[in-house]
Length: 491
Image (cartoon, rainbow, N blue to C red):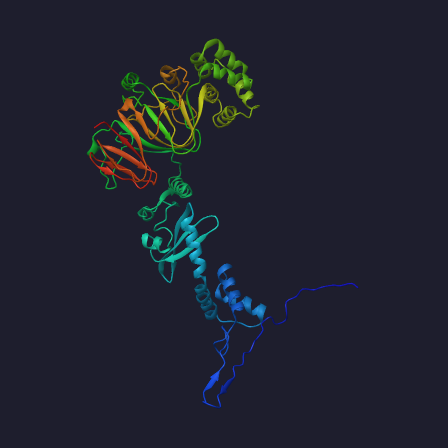
């Protein structure tokens, strides 16, 4: 026997079930008793729960408009339902979700990390906000007229939540003090993209201070210096998406001399330190010669290794910049290697053809900071920031001498004059844990955790990881709601 099966929809899948309710009169007491209709059959005619479920599924899950939902039901079932009935189904079905909503809410409140957001939309000419709390497996949504704390709290998750809430640093979230807060970098990246689109150029840094080349002002247009006088430091946020220039900074004596000769914008030294907010890749100081020779031998960069071995570090760097040492054999050798140092040379040689700085990087310390680690850059330290985000504290100066890796002005002669060729065996600051002293500028960068209390001892500037920038007058008390870096000075 051969069997062949065909699976097909019935011609009319809509089945009508009639319930006949009989009434009986008691022969003794004459009371009339009528049978009770089953649940879902209260009216003379109605649609059943499975059809209501299909209508809700098509309209809500598949986002079909009411009219198109009715069209689909008519095609499948042979009967057209009204738009009003479909809308009423949602109301009835939503009432059965209370146990599910309570379970989702409880699961979110127990989760160690939740993501929160709010999106605006208009309905019937009025502004509404769609609030969301979610994890990878649970999502809770709520439409509310308010964006702030009232709407956020209406979800029933954040008030009393004790985990970590990740959000877009909307101020209302920070009013929830029972939990820890983390700021979503996707929102930061989107806002920074918006800046580059509006300004038609990327922003690598934001600085705060009173230096005349970029004085900070308040929202009312008044100058920071009107309240503080000239501050001895600059505070910056640095975000390097690609390598920045290879550079050095002068000592006070060199700056004073260069300012008098018209090659420096001011007569101050520019010591600096950088604290990593993300993994931060940098070049910092001259690598010990033995380590550089080991690297060059491994790369097969024989000519550069010979020059370094015979002449030492300062003549080798000068030879590259003066053209006495041909960088091309070293670049070719790097093209055969997959080491990170070689890949950097390859990338820079393509981006800046004929710039010997690409090869000079092989003679410098390559450092990858973890968040919280720091570099201290003294005068003469040759360095470059390659990628990552960090907080910079430096002396109030704009004296930068660039040797290359940039389209900005370079001054090789001055760089070679003030470069400190002393090998730097330990470029990463030792013992720094939340306090990063910059003694040359007479100040310290301090990280304040949320909820800690700090009282300023002088005119202090602060940057919060929630995006805030603050000025603290002397004797001002600050209790940040997000991790904050503040510059302290001796009282």
